[in-house]
Each structure stands twice: as C-alpha cells, then as structure tokens.
Amino acid sequence: MSHTKDDSHSTIRKQACSPVSTVLQDDMLSVNSVSEQPPTDVTPKWWASKSLEHKPIEGAYAWTVVASGFAMLMFAMGCVASYGSYQTYYHLHQFPHEPTSTLSWIGTFQFAILNMFGIPAGILCERFDSRLVTFVGGLIMGASLIIASFCNNSVWKLMITQGFMFGMGAALMYIPAVSMPAQWFTKHRALAVGIVISGSGIGGLWLTSATTHMITQLGTAWALRITGIIIFAVNSVASLFMRNRLVVKSREKIVDFTILRDLRFLLIFCGSVCGTLAYFTPLFMLPSFAIQVSGKSDDFGTNLLTIFNAASTVGRIATGQVAASLGNINTLSLCGLIASLSVLVLWLPFQSGGTLVACAIVYGLFCGGFVGLVPVVMAELWGIQRIATIIGLLYISNFIGTMIGAPSSSALLDNVGGGTNYKPSIIFSGVFMMIAFLFFAVLRVSVNRSLIAKV
Image (cartoon, rainbow, N blue to C red):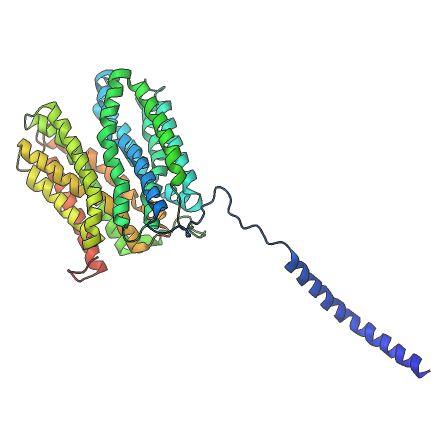
C-alpha cells in the first residue's frame, strides 16, 4: 500500500514538472536545430566588388593595375585631345555653315560629361566590381563613336553620341583608372598615379596624328568606327586587371556629402575649379597665337601642341618622384605657382618662337604635375577606402571649370581682344592659375604650419 502511494506521488511530481521540462527540451531542440543549420552563403555576387587584400602592396599585380589604367586613359583622354582633328574637318568640309563655337560643344561635352559623371562612376566602383564598371565604360565609348559614324549629317546627333555618350563612358573608365592605383601603392603612390595619368598625354601625342590621317584617307565616318572598335578591343583586355584591392562596406548614404564641410576639401575643390579655368587657354590658343601674332607656320603651331603633350607626359611622371621627396601638397602648390608664372612671364610679354616653345615646355611639365597629384593628395588626406567616390565628387570642379573657362577665354579674345589681341585671355589664364596656387598654399598651411615640413 505504501508502495502504491509512492508511485502516485512520483507520477504527480512528473506531471507537475512536465510543462517546464517540455519547454526546456523544446528550447534545447530549437538551439540544436539552429546550430545544425548550414551556414548562410555569404559568397559575393559575381558583380560585387571583391577584396584582394591577400595581394601584396606594390607587387606585380599592382603594376598590372597601373598598366591597365594607363591604357584606359590613353584612349579616354586621347580621344578628347584629338577632337580638334574632327572639328577642323567638320568646319571646313562637313558643316561649313555651322559656327565654330557650335562645333566646339561636341568636344566640350566629352570632357565636361566625363567630369560630371564622376560621382556616379565613383559610386559604381564602390558597389560593383571595377572590372565590370570599366568594361561597360569601354563598351559605351566604343558604341558611341560607332553610332556617331552613322549620324554625321547632324551636329546635334554628334553632340549626343560623340559628345555626351562618349563622355559618360569615359567617366566609367577614368575614375577607376585614376583611383584604383592609390589602393595598391603606398611608397610609390604618386609615381603610380602619375604613370596612369601620363596615358592621357601619350594618347594625345599619337592619337591626334592617327585621327588626322584616318580622316584624310577614309573620312570621318570610318575614322570614328575604327577608333571605336580599337577602344572596345583594348579596354576589354585592360578591364580584366582593373580590380579593387579593398572592399568598401555598404552604407545608408549613397554619397557622403559631409566631406563638403571639411575645409581641406573645399580648398582643393576651389583650387581645382580655378586651375581648370586656366588650364585650357594655353592648350587651345598657343598654336593660333604662334600663327597669327608671331607669324609662324601652321606646322610650328602644331608642333607647339606636340611639345606641350610631351612635356605634360613627362611632368605627370616626374612630379611623382619629386613628391616623394618634397611631399605631395608641397609639390602640388609648387606646380600651380610655376605653371602660372610660365604663362605670365614667358607668354604674356613675348612673341618670339623661342619663348613660346619655353612656355609650352614649362607649362606642360608643371600642369601635368598639377593634374597628376590631385588624386594622390586626396588619398593622403582621406585614405583609400572611399577614394573613388571622393575623387568623383571633386571632379565636379573640373566640370565647372571646363564649362566656364574655355568659353570665357574665347569670349575675351573675340570681344575684348578683337580676335587678334591675346593678352586678355593670357592674363585670364595666368591669374586664375595663380589663384589656384593660393588655394593650395592655404591648404598646405592648414595641414601643417611648419614651412619646412614634408607635407
């Protein structure tokens, strides 16, 4: 009888504890089931940016990225530099009744849209594989020229295809090509970026003469088609190696505009606007000045442009080496100062052929350094994680300077100088380049007040 009573008490205790034990068992089962679930697949999508941090900095692959960027800029900026060959033919043969100012908008759109699309290009570089971004850019560039070859009976169609569409594709190549080397280099960063940007000078050297020859022998339509096919073929290979080294973490804001509150960024932005305002005047007007004012031949004027492009190529590489010793911001400021003095001292008071050659050499050398060092300074001040987006935002300054600078300089020549007095335009260029130097000098002091420090 007592045994039965004990069994009943035991049964009651089990029943009383069963809800608790059931809950505990359920919890344990749920934990076990979670722990036994296969891990979620975190493999990046094929189109997403992938990390290559295991690759050594300044190793063989890093220099492959530099070579790819060099090839991309050779065509992206070389085509912009060679547009003058098309404009000459358009004006003399294809559209003889169209004003030169109207035809010039095709080339203006190329460079202006390239800079205006800097922000979208930087965002795409952060969120997608740079190989895909640059491949699409080359595809758009090649397609734009091929389509333009079938639209060469209308200026507005050429503005859309050879101008706007080409500039949009060029931005997708230019921004990655300029920003990616900063992720792959530390000690030789300025040299690497300088080599990449020198591609634009090399492209300007040979692509201008090649374009002129193709137009003379085959006409503008086939010149556009051949150039478009070559761009697509070369970029398809180069884009395979244009890879991010670091993956940028996703964020809520597509573009972080808080950098606009940073005084250092505003100084660089304003300096870049003024520098771009001044940049194109010698490039566009030195040849015509030599012919109209100095009485030189057409070949001499063309050779001045060749000398400028050659000096600019050397300057973009050499200033990288100088910056390694003097500091990036110091060298950037020095480039702005000497470029300004070359215009105001060598060009403004003189008309001889020798001083024009000297101006082309000195201006080309130090303007090349000016262009090449800005991305390096950006990487030095804000790091390399979001360098593509920051450079894209900065290049809005180039868009502003391009849209204002060249038209203003031409207007001064036509309306103030009567078409033959270049001094107002020369002063315009030299003064704005000097203002750019002053902005960079203030940046230098804001970063480090010691005048002998390497900054």
